[in-house]
Length: 194
Image (cartoon, rainbow, N blue to C red; front, side, top):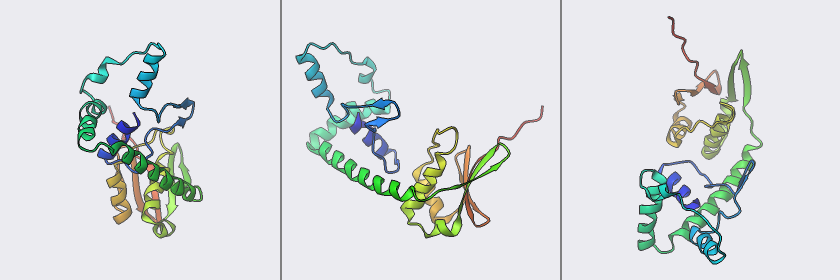
């Protein structure tokens, strides 16, 4: 599952990520680093009944295509690719730890305009940051919207914004520069007159 997730996110152009976390909120995944084959072999050796979801064999979903088509191809041409991906993932984890430590020191200011929430950050201070911190600071700001449901702006849009500060939006959230500040806010839905 971890390899499939890392490959899927990589090919979709996701920002730096650590794949599936071992622990998130109430969920703990102690077997994340153990292969499916090892788990199945252990279950068989110890007469533990298990089932395999039959939809895993269908190539209807991207994850299944990665599992059933891409991974066997990679296995045939690069036998040690899995350890390379996992080492690369560990490097990403270390970079993310560094970024997290830096981002803990930096906060958006929240401006409430009635029921509307808007985040602002001083443009001059933002402009002094390294590009990777700017990008991740924007993602940190986006996490404040929609009760924690993170709007997944494509990485390229965020990178374009920090390069030229031209307004971008997801249809629901807008990021723009105005009045010496960087702003993140919800886009108001226009009410239709009947």
